[in-house]
View 1: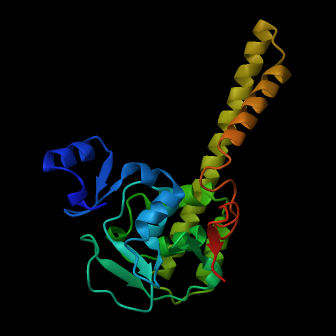
View 2 (view 1 turned 30 degrees about the vertical axis):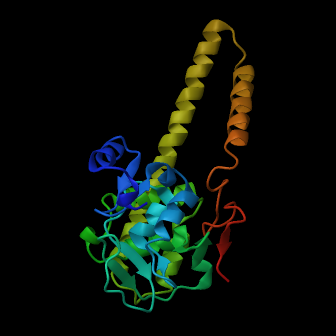
View 3 (view 1 turned 45 degrees about the vertical axis):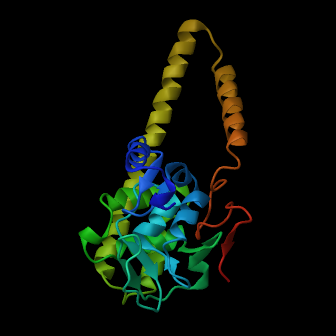
Length: 250
């Protein structure tokens, strides 16, 4: 959306303050509601990625997970781009990218969640990556059902990638983080079950009835959200369950 489309500077500032619009620069903004869905974020990013290039790094992470729009546009391409797009530098990564590690969301070409994690880990300087990169990678991989071992396999197959050693160590830390998070979740669920058991012993409620009710509620939630974004576990490439508009590049 061009700033000229909004009437008056005060009207624009009010829309930004109320988080109706998110400003990219002095000339352009996007509706905040678009950033709430996978395909909405893809439609925003496709306006900034040059033709023939693929979004990667922080931009691809934003497409897959949302959050704050990155301050630069990272792409995979064999070309060089000197012009800025909406005040942001286009940073080119010329690395081997097999077709199975690229996906198309509508008109946007973007690295898969697995490959995005590898590219984020391989960024040379902390300033090039988003803050809390390990936590963001862990969240993305968990969201799409991807194992860290798949990312590590990709790194081992490309030992000449920049920052290879630190990237391996980062992903191993991510694996430990995900394991600890899983253990905490299991412990929390065990404590909840124990509390329910204690309560039921005091009140005489059958725990099987309570669990059955919870399961039915969960089924309802799954049915209500079946059409949201990914539609479930995604597997190694971050593709399965994305719907007809998401295509693996062949």
